[in-house]
Length: 363
DNA sequence: TAGGCGTGGAC
DNA sequence: TGTCCAAGCCT
Image 1 (cartoon, rainbow, N blue to C red):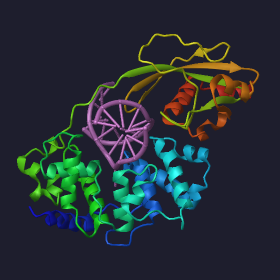
Image 2: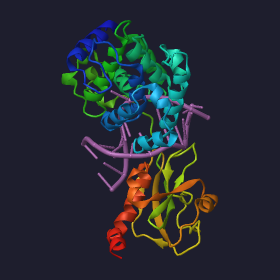
Image 3: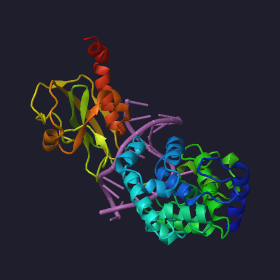
Image 4: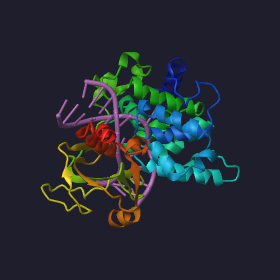
């Protein structure tokens, strides 16, 4: 197989079948603003196109360029990211925007090495921006490309050990020109035709050249090492309510859900059955339902305990006992920008007391 | 280098 | 229902 045949066949297919996406220029046309390419690439890390589109549109409308984003408040940006997951991306997004805005000219670096040095920009993202926004030849390797290449060459080495080998093979088929279109064509192919399950080989422009197809079992690739079981953890979320407001806690900047608002909780532990002392004195009531949430590396089941206070403790007193936080109006809990785990806690409380608002209004 | 780090959709 | 997976990065 001549390597250039792969690129030629793929690019020809892409010119007719490229997906139209909000951050993308049609094949052959001038590339989009690097800010838009960067913003989309960060959002798309480990995240589906369908999930990203509404966030991308909202972000672009609210912060149309890197200078505007650099001027955003931390809390506003974290709240706008709420629900999209992997919140370190949001923290790095802001750090990166401020870094770029402070550069002479306030523009993104235009080569791979310069991009790679930015916070939140790794090998894949640097290559993708260099190719798509700046037309540089770069070897763009994401999960799609790994799958396509592993099938094209029937690579038997299991992931993740195969990464270096797959990157070398991707380098071999990457053309000197049209690097941006080629990268996006590979990713489109992986997303729509060379899919993890039931690949549509009959529609594939590379079918004739594909070793896995020739071997009759393309779905077997990429070979993957077995993964570990996901442990189960349990804990309790504390719902503290006073005079129509609930206490929200700002989580530490690093770690799980770092920098996001949420409810105070106990530790999350694998040993269950332990009774946890509440963090504030009073008559706590355990709600019936529990909140289950699955993270990448563990599953969590939270009990929810409620405390009603007739007098609102000062924020300073609660912050001293529970950590940095704030009172939030109950009626506007939907605007707090809670990550999904805590949005579910709020929903569980709401479902437990469906008529509470009416009773309060009537009483 | 392997593990931490979210979420929702597909099957 | 559980399992897998999606345009990875950081430490």
